[in-house]
Image (cartoon, rainbow, N blue to C red; front, side):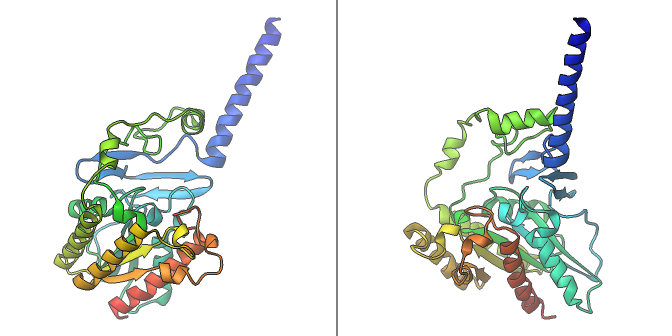
Length: 315
């Protein structure tokens, strides 16, 4: 009887270990990216992390960027700083070398401009950041001597709320520590119902002219880039439902028009991908979901940005 019990326990333990190893090696559970709170920015990816999710490599450097570790910039380096949210970041569904920043970097290096020995495209981004988060990041860390600062936003970002650190350690998508087991992460993320954060309700109900506040933040980002003798490029990607008919909703059309007029008044170099995506026969082939781009979408966006960078830098 005891021998049977020992065998059963051994088999159960062996199965548990096998499942744990499989969840870690195949899906990356047990080693999620973690976040840290920041009073001004709201939250940042914790610096110096490496992991794999669903086979996709993710690396976060010492400045909470989705980029390799960086050092002081030599004079012969072309550096571009990309600011953005999950579209720029790429999330767990995008391998490191398939992010917009990595694709631009590879494409620029392929052009081999003779006056630069090294080309870096840095990726300062995090899920659900808006223009005010990105402005706060730039205010805290600076532009890293980048010749060009590129801000990538989407239509929803025009309505983004003020930065907050409330989700850190409380929202399952923003953990502040590693779980003890991969199984714990799976249960927490996919089995148990997430607990709401009551204080977030006030943030989400932010009143007044949200679009105006975010346009103001974009203007301040432009001003900071000018102070550091950098060029500024603003990029807008649409939501999937905006493409084709019936197109953007009325409030989105108005917000987009305000942005367009703002870029003209402020003389901001601006790329709106809605017209280009509207020429695509099957826009769904560009998207991972209703808002985030897949590799094909990233390739289109990165190529257009690269060409614009070449025009700006004149090489």
